Image (cartoon, rainbow, N blue to C red; front, side, top):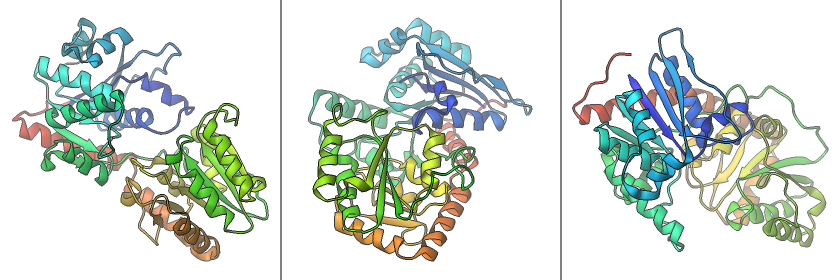
Amino acid sequence: MNITLVATDRDVTRACTHLLPAGISTHVVSLARGLVDRGHEVTLLTGRDDRGGVDISYRHEDGGGLRVVRLSQESVHAVTAGEGRVGREVADAVEGAAPDLLHSHGLGGSVLARDASAAFGIPWVAQLHDVSGRIPARTPDAMRRRRVEKDVARDAGRLIALCREEASDLVAAGARPDGVDVVHRPYDPAVFDVRGPMLPRSKRARVVGVVDDFTPASGITELVKAVSRVPDVSLLVVGGPQSPTPASDAFLAQTRLTARQLGVADRMQVTGRLSPMRMAEHLRSADVVVSVPWKSGFADHVLEAMACGRPVIASSSGGALDVIEHGITGICVPAQSPQRLTDALRMVLCDREQREQMGQLARKRVVEGFSLGHVVEGTLGSYDRMLAASGRRARAS
C-alpha cells in the first residue's frame, strides 16, 4: 500500500531526538516506521522547522520505504487558513507521492488533507489526536477550531480516535458512528521500561504527579490537597513549563502558596518539562503515579507510567478509561475530587504487596495491548475499511 501521512503543525521528525514529550510527533514517526516495517511505502508530509528535523528516510529489507517531504510554512498556511485550495508545492508533493490514501494528523494536517483529497480524489483518513468535544467554545479561536473539527468529522472518509471518549466526541461533532475506529497510541519500549536508572530513594513514599501544563485544569491543586492529608509522602511534579519559576508562571506561584498553607511545601518539588528519557527515570522512582486533569485525551503519561511498572491513579475520563482496569492495573477517580484522590492514595500506599502486584499487572497490560504492532494493525484495518467503502483497492507494495 502507498500511504501519505500528513502532519503539518510542525516538523514532526524532531521527535526522533527523544527530546520532545510524547504526543502527535512521536506517534506519527512511530506509525510511519511501523508501516514501513510491514512493507508499505510511506511519504510523510510535514512542516519545515528552522531548528531542523532528523532525517528518518530509509528503506526496509522487506521492501517498504519512508520518504519525508518538508513543506514551507507559507504553503501550509495557504491551506490551513481556509482558502480551500492546494498550492503548487503541496500539489507537487501529493502528486509525487501518488498515494492510495492520505492519513492526516492534527487539525492543520487534516485541513490540508481534506483539500488535497478533494483536489485529487484520494481517499482520506483523519486523526485529530485531540477533540474539543462538548466543552463550550468561548473565544474566536475555540469557535474556529470547533467549526474545523465539525468539517473534518463530516468530510473525512474515515476517522481514527485515540480513545472511546474521543470517538463519542467525534460522533457528536457529526461523524457517522460506523465511520470511527479507536486506535490507541503506542508506548516506546526503548524508553519506558521497568529497567533503567531511577532517582535516589528517601524514607518517604514518593508520589509523582504528571501534568501537561500548569493550569487549574491540570488537577495539580487537588493533588496537593490530597498529599497534605497523607503523612510521610513526598510529591514530585513533572511537566508544565520547561524551567518553571513562580515569577514566570502565575499558577505555579499559586500552587506553591497552596502547598505552604497546607504545610506540604517542604515535601513538594517541581521539575518542569522533561525529555522522555528523564521522564522514565522519574516514573520508575515513584511508588504511585498520579495524573488527574479535569479532562484528558489519550493519557500518554498513564501508559508510560504503566510501562514502567508503576500503579497509576488517573482521572476517570479520556484514554485512562481505556487503559486502566480499575482496581487491577490502577485506579480511576473523578476529576476535581480531592477526597476521592486522598482515599485512592491511602489505599495504594498502605499495601506494598498490592502496589507491586498492581504495577506488574499494569506493565503486562501495556506490553500485551499497546505495542506499536497493535497500533499498526488497528490503523491498517481502518485503511482497509475506508478503501472498501470507497470501492478502491490498494496497489501492492
